[in-house]
Length: 214
Image (cartoon, rainbow, N blue to C red; front, side, top):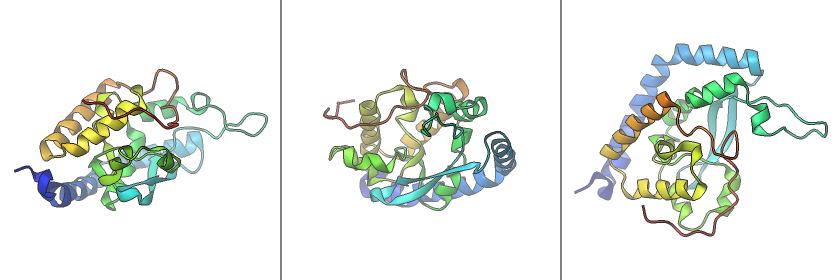
Protein backbone atom coordinates (compact mmCIF):
# COMPACT_ATOMS: atom_id res chain seq x y z
CA UNK A 1 0.00 0.00 0.00
CA UNK A 2 1.35 3.44 -0.93
CA UNK A 3 1.32 6.25 1.59
CA UNK A 4 -0.07 8.61 -1.05
CA UNK A 5 -3.01 6.34 -1.91
CA UNK A 6 -4.47 6.82 1.59
CA UNK A 7 -3.22 10.38 1.98
CA UNK A 8 -1.20 9.36 5.05
CA UNK A 9 2.13 10.62 3.78
CA UNK A 10 0.80 13.82 2.20
CA UNK A 11 -1.51 14.73 5.09
CA UNK A 12 0.63 13.81 8.08
CA UNK A 13 4.23 12.75 7.46
CA UNK A 14 4.97 15.29 4.72
CA UNK A 15 3.33 18.07 6.72
CA UNK A 16 5.43 17.22 9.78
CA UNK A 17 8.63 17.13 7.73
CA UNK A 18 7.79 20.50 6.18
CA UNK A 19 7.22 22.11 9.57
CA UNK A 20 10.36 20.71 11.18
CA UNK A 21 12.68 21.29 8.21
CA UNK A 22 11.45 24.85 7.61
CA UNK A 23 11.78 25.70 11.32
CA UNK A 24 15.32 24.31 11.50
CA UNK A 25 16.19 25.92 8.17
CA UNK A 26 15.07 29.37 9.30
CA UNK A 27 17.18 29.10 12.45
CA UNK A 28 20.31 27.61 10.88
CA UNK A 29 20.23 29.89 7.85
CA UNK A 30 19.29 33.06 9.75
CA UNK A 31 22.85 34.52 9.53
CA UNK A 32 22.86 33.98 5.75
CA UNK A 33 19.35 35.41 5.42
CA UNK A 34 20.41 38.53 7.33
CA UNK A 35 23.54 39.04 5.21
CA UNK A 36 21.63 38.60 1.95
CA UNK A 37 18.88 40.93 3.18
CA UNK A 38 21.44 43.66 3.87
CA UNK A 39 23.20 43.14 0.50
CA UNK A 40 19.95 43.27 -1.43
CA UNK A 41 18.76 46.36 0.41
CA UNK A 42 22.10 48.11 -0.20
CA UNK A 43 22.44 47.17 -3.88
CA UNK A 44 18.85 47.00 -5.07
CA UNK A 45 17.05 49.19 -2.57
CA UNK A 46 13.90 48.63 -0.58
CA UNK A 47 12.00 46.48 -0.19
CA UNK A 48 14.65 43.76 -0.03
CA UNK A 49 11.95 41.11 0.20
CA UNK A 50 9.82 40.64 -2.91
CA UNK A 51 6.21 39.86 -1.98
CA UNK A 52 3.72 38.59 -4.54
CA UNK A 53 0.38 36.84 -4.40
CA UNK A 54 0.42 33.28 -5.71
CA UNK A 55 -2.21 30.52 -5.84
CA UNK A 56 -1.61 27.65 -3.43
CA UNK A 57 -3.53 24.56 -2.37
CA UNK A 58 -6.98 24.54 -3.99
CA UNK A 59 -6.03 27.84 -5.69
CA UNK A 60 -6.15 29.67 -2.36
CA UNK A 61 -4.18 32.90 -2.73
CA UNK A 62 -1.24 33.53 -0.39
CA UNK A 63 1.68 35.96 -0.24
CA UNK A 64 4.96 34.43 -1.38
CA UNK A 65 8.26 35.82 -0.08
CA UNK A 66 11.53 35.95 -2.04
CA UNK A 67 14.63 38.09 -2.05
CA UNK A 68 14.46 40.84 -4.61
CA UNK A 69 16.69 40.21 -7.66
CA UNK A 70 15.75 42.97 -10.10
CA UNK A 71 15.77 46.76 -10.12
CA UNK A 72 12.79 48.94 -10.96
CA UNK A 73 14.46 50.55 -14.00
CA UNK A 74 11.99 51.92 -16.53
CA UNK A 75 12.16 53.26 -20.06
CA UNK A 76 11.39 56.83 -21.13
CA UNK A 77 7.67 56.05 -21.19
CA UNK A 78 7.64 54.73 -17.65
CA UNK A 79 7.44 51.05 -18.53
CA UNK A 80 9.58 48.49 -16.75
CA UNK A 81 12.57 47.35 -18.80
CA UNK A 82 12.84 43.66 -19.83
CA UNK A 83 13.92 41.25 -17.08
CA UNK A 84 17.35 40.82 -18.64
CA UNK A 85 18.08 44.53 -18.26
CA UNK A 86 16.80 44.76 -14.70
CA UNK A 87 18.47 41.59 -13.42
CA UNK A 88 21.68 42.61 -11.63
CA UNK A 89 24.85 40.58 -11.05
CA UNK A 90 23.78 40.07 -7.45
CA UNK A 91 20.33 39.06 -8.64
CA UNK A 92 21.75 36.53 -11.09
CA UNK A 93 23.90 35.04 -8.36
CA UNK A 94 20.96 34.76 -5.98
CA UNK A 95 18.89 33.08 -8.67
CA UNK A 96 21.48 30.63 -9.93
CA UNK A 97 22.19 29.53 -6.35
CA UNK A 98 18.46 29.61 -5.47
CA UNK A 99 19.28 31.79 -2.45
CA UNK A 100 16.52 34.16 -3.56
CA UNK A 101 14.01 31.38 -2.75
CA UNK A 102 15.09 30.92 0.90
CA UNK A 103 12.48 33.32 2.37
CA UNK A 104 9.90 30.80 1.17
CA UNK A 105 10.93 28.71 4.17
CA UNK A 106 8.65 31.08 6.07
CA UNK A 107 5.78 30.18 3.72
CA UNK A 108 6.49 26.51 4.40
CA UNK A 109 6.61 27.12 8.16
CA UNK A 110 3.21 28.83 7.94
CA UNK A 111 1.79 25.82 6.11
CA UNK A 112 1.21 27.63 2.80
CA UNK A 113 3.87 25.70 0.92
CA UNK A 114 5.78 22.42 1.07
CA UNK A 115 9.44 21.55 0.59
CA UNK A 116 8.50 19.58 -2.55
CA UNK A 117 5.59 20.27 -4.86
CA UNK A 118 4.62 22.15 -8.04
CA UNK A 119 6.08 25.65 -8.02
CA UNK A 120 3.55 28.43 -7.21
CA UNK A 121 3.01 30.46 -10.36
CA UNK A 122 1.34 33.80 -11.08
CA UNK A 123 -2.31 34.43 -10.22
CA UNK A 124 -2.85 35.77 -13.73
CA UNK A 125 -2.21 32.29 -15.16
CA UNK A 126 -5.23 30.73 -13.43
CA UNK A 127 -7.74 31.43 -16.26
CA UNK A 128 -5.26 30.04 -18.83
CA UNK A 129 -4.91 26.52 -17.42
CA UNK A 130 -6.64 23.55 -18.97
CA UNK A 131 -8.84 21.48 -16.65
CA UNK A 132 -6.02 18.99 -16.25
CA UNK A 133 -3.37 21.65 -15.60
CA UNK A 134 -5.46 23.12 -12.79
CA UNK A 135 -5.00 19.84 -10.97
CA UNK A 136 -1.49 21.04 -10.06
CA UNK A 137 -3.20 22.93 -7.23
CA UNK A 138 -4.49 19.71 -5.65
CA UNK A 139 -1.38 19.76 -3.44
CA UNK A 140 0.60 22.52 -1.74
CA UNK A 141 3.08 24.34 -3.98
CA UNK A 142 6.72 23.56 -3.30
CA UNK A 143 10.08 25.21 -2.82
CA UNK A 144 11.32 22.70 -5.38
CA UNK A 145 9.64 20.11 -7.56
CA UNK A 146 9.98 17.51 -10.27
CA UNK A 147 9.93 20.16 -13.00
CA UNK A 148 12.74 22.09 -11.32
CA UNK A 149 15.07 19.09 -11.17
CA UNK A 150 14.17 18.25 -14.77
CA UNK A 151 15.29 21.51 -16.29
CA UNK A 152 14.05 24.42 -14.14
CA UNK A 153 13.41 27.40 -16.46
CA UNK A 154 15.02 25.74 -19.48
CA UNK A 155 12.04 23.50 -20.34
CA UNK A 156 8.71 24.46 -21.91
CA UNK A 157 5.56 25.24 -19.99
CA UNK A 158 3.88 22.09 -21.30
CA UNK A 159 6.75 19.95 -20.06
CA UNK A 160 6.65 21.65 -16.66
CA UNK A 161 2.93 21.06 -16.24
CA UNK A 162 3.23 17.45 -17.34
CA UNK A 163 5.95 16.91 -14.74
CA UNK A 164 3.85 18.61 -12.05
CA UNK A 165 0.98 16.24 -12.78
CA UNK A 166 3.30 13.27 -12.88
CA UNK A 167 4.56 14.21 -9.41
CA UNK A 168 1.03 14.46 -8.03
CA UNK A 169 0.19 11.03 -9.50
CA UNK A 170 3.24 9.47 -7.81
CA UNK A 171 3.73 11.44 -4.62
CA UNK A 172 5.53 9.52 -1.88
CA UNK A 173 8.42 9.93 0.55
CA UNK A 174 10.96 8.31 -1.78
CA UNK A 175 10.05 10.65 -4.64
CA UNK A 176 10.39 13.67 -2.35
CA UNK A 177 13.80 12.59 -1.06
CA UNK A 178 14.95 11.95 -4.63
CA UNK A 179 13.79 15.41 -5.73
CA UNK A 180 15.52 17.12 -2.79
CA UNK A 181 18.80 15.37 -3.59
CA UNK A 182 18.51 16.25 -7.28
CA UNK A 183 17.72 19.86 -6.32
CA UNK A 184 20.98 20.10 -4.38
CA UNK A 185 22.84 18.73 -7.40
CA UNK A 186 21.09 21.14 -9.79
CA UNK A 187 21.90 24.14 -7.59
CA UNK A 188 25.55 23.14 -7.26
CA UNK A 189 25.93 22.76 -11.04
CA UNK A 190 23.60 25.69 -11.79
CA UNK A 191 21.62 23.85 -14.46
CA UNK A 192 18.57 25.17 -16.27
CA UNK A 193 18.44 28.63 -14.71
CA UNK A 194 17.08 30.39 -17.79
CA UNK A 195 15.08 29.47 -20.83
CA UNK A 196 16.56 29.75 -24.31
CA UNK A 197 14.62 32.94 -25.06
CA UNK A 198 14.54 34.94 -21.84
CA UNK A 199 16.71 35.89 -18.86
CA UNK A 200 13.95 34.28 -16.82
CA UNK A 201 11.08 31.97 -17.80
CA UNK A 202 8.87 33.49 -20.50
CA UNK A 203 5.26 34.25 -19.61
CA UNK A 204 2.67 31.49 -19.90
CA UNK A 205 0.01 32.37 -22.47
CA UNK A 206 -2.02 29.19 -22.44
CA UNK A 207 -1.75 25.90 -24.27
CA UNK A 208 -3.86 23.73 -26.53
CA UNK A 209 -1.65 20.68 -26.07
CA UNK A 210 -2.94 17.63 -24.26
CA UNK A 211 -0.95 16.00 -21.53
CA UNK A 212 1.98 13.97 -22.77
CA UNK A 213 2.75 10.54 -21.42
CA UNK A 214 6.03 10.61 -19.48
